[in-house]
Length: 394
Image (cartoon, rainbow, N blue to C red; front, side, top):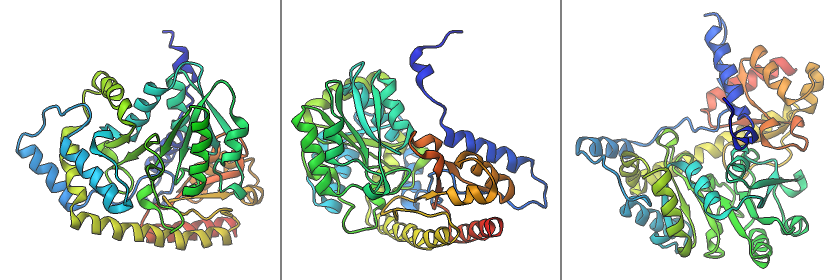
């Protein structure tokens, strides 16, 4: 059967392809083999806290499973609005918030609402692969602009201005970023947005790791800058609800009806049970637990980065958020006699039973030189992984 050209443009999600290989290897391992340590998937090892789980059970027992409005439960939109005020001291009216079936649905809705066929959207290289594929699925084109460690692997206002042409529609940035864990300062974000606005373009900011910011210089939402900013967020990372598939989108008031119309047709509504559960994310006890977990993620980062650097897996820019380490693996490749990060990932998987993600997914410029580690695992697992890597690379 002939498939669409659109589908043919979408590359495999190599993170998941490597994950499948790691799982297959683990399943075929002998009982005496060490268990696979998965440092490849960006998924918190924490689950939703007790109040959230209890809220889901109550919703089920109460029969609260009918459709909600396509934009989400009004109570949940209101609580998200309050969270912006409480956490960031930013006023974001509930009327501008659209609850979605994960951040993926939010990105899809934003792209379908705002991108026309042939539009180009500027993104940094490296960046999360699915973001560029959402642009492609809307018949736009993602333009990846190579970045350097000196630029914190992020775009600058100068680079955006230099790359802008008559086909450019806007930018899609992530702060903090996957795979690098680096953020854009609010002052630089302001300059980027001014360039975009000067051309009549759009600024879409992926902020799904914003709650997991660790440094005072960063950790502020781009929504503080302008009501024209489009922000993507999620209950998956900071709120530890990955498989619940719930996120949200913040758009200007005049875009809400457009997004609502698309959401009605494409999704009807997000999961009702997940929405009722998410209301409990904003209870004081839940927020205290999330902050405790954020501190734990920082502690894991603070242990893991120096150990990687000692192994020659150098992290050129320490991540200020999320739970990733973007490591230069050139020395490790040379030591083990492999070509690039793709081959190294399989070497580590087979010889050390440590699953990691090669750079291939995240762009085209020098991605064979870098490998991504996820530090979303408990500290004992990270310590065991370092021990195995040390044995292999010593």
